[in-house]
Length: 431
Picture 1: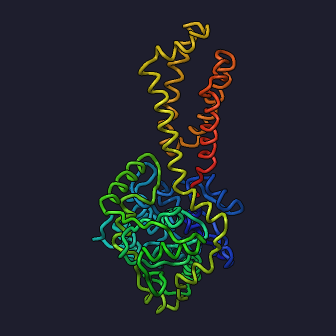
Picture 2 (picture 1 turned 180 degrees about the horizontal axis):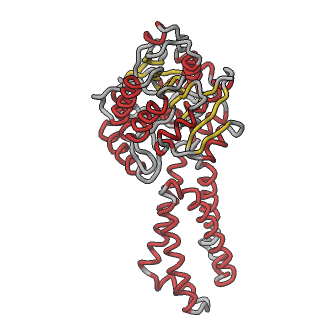
Picture 3 (picture 1 turned 30 degrees about the vertical axis):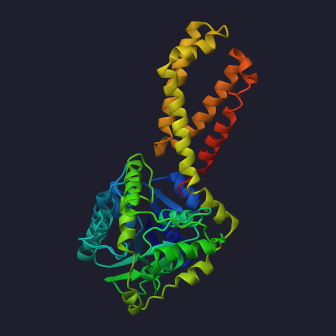
C-alpha cells in the first residue's frame, strides 16, 4: 500500500487531503502539534504529534523513509504568538528537501495563488521563498496554488465570508470592485491525490481555480443567497480607513494567540484580488475545477450553517463583554475598597475576612478578565468565571443573604454572566 504523510493534517486543507488520500488507497499519517485538534479532526487516523518547524532533518528522514508522497499543507497567515512564517513556510520546506534527498518520494506543496518575492505581504513572500527552495532542490515535486478555498467546514477566511454574509439586516460593502476566484476543497484534494499518484508530471506549478471570477461584493451576495437569508435592508460602505483600523486591531489580537481572518495580511491579500490561471493545471491533464455556482450547489446550506453565520461575530462580542465586565468589576473595587468592605462589614462580617475577600476577589476578577483575552487561556478563564461566580453566590448565602432580596437583584444578575461565560467556553472551538 502506498503511504502518504500530510503536514498540517488537521487544518482545513490538510484534513481534506488526508480523507481524499485515504479514499484513494493511501495509508495516511498526519503531522501536527495539537493532539486534541488531531483527534477531533480524525480520531481513526495515524498521527505524529510534533511542532512541525521544530522537526530536524534526521527526524524527517525517519518519518519519510517509506513514504511515497509528502503533502505540505502546513501554513500560517501572519506572525503571531503561535506562528512564525519563516519557520513554517521556509525552514520546514528546506528541511523537507534535505531529508528527501535520495528517497523515492514526491513532495506536494500547497502554496497560494499570487505568491511572489515582491508580493505585498510577508505571507506571500515567505511562501514564494519556500516554493523556490522546493523547486531548486527537490528531485520530485509539484506546487499547487489554490485561490480562495470554499468548504463545508468553516475556518479562517471562509468562516469570515459566512459570518459577513449572514449579518442580520445589514451587509457592509467592502472592497466592492475587487475580483475574486474560488475553488472547492474537494477539487483541491483531488488535485493533491492526482499529484500523489503521479498523474501529473514533476516540476508542475499550477494554480487551482474556477474558470471565471466575480467581484467580492457579488461573492458575498451569492453566499448570503445560498445561506437562505433575505437581502439586506442596508448596505453601508465600509471605508478603507476603517478596514485598516480593524486590521491593526486584529494584529494586536494575533499577538494574544487569536488567528483572526481580519488581520492586515488577509485584508491586504483581499485588496490585491484573489485570482489564478487554470491553464497550467489543465494542460498537465488535471481535472478542471468547478465554478462558484457548482460549488454552492454541492455544499449544504443547513440550519447549522445559518446558526454558525449568526454566531460568528457574537462570539468575539461575548468575549469582549466578559473581559470588560470582569476587569471593570475588579477595578472598581480596587479604586474604592472601603465601599466594598463596608458591604461586608455592615453584615457583621469581620474585617479580617472582609479585607482579603474584597481585595482577593477584585484581583481574581481582573485576572479572569485579562485571561479570557489570551487565546491559550480563554476557555479556562471562561470556566474560571463560572466557578468564581458560583463561589460568590454561595458566599453571599452565608455572609449576606439579604442581597438575594435586594430589589435591584444583584445576585440574580450573576446568572446571565455565568450563562454567557458558559456559551463562550463551549464555542471556543478552533477547528
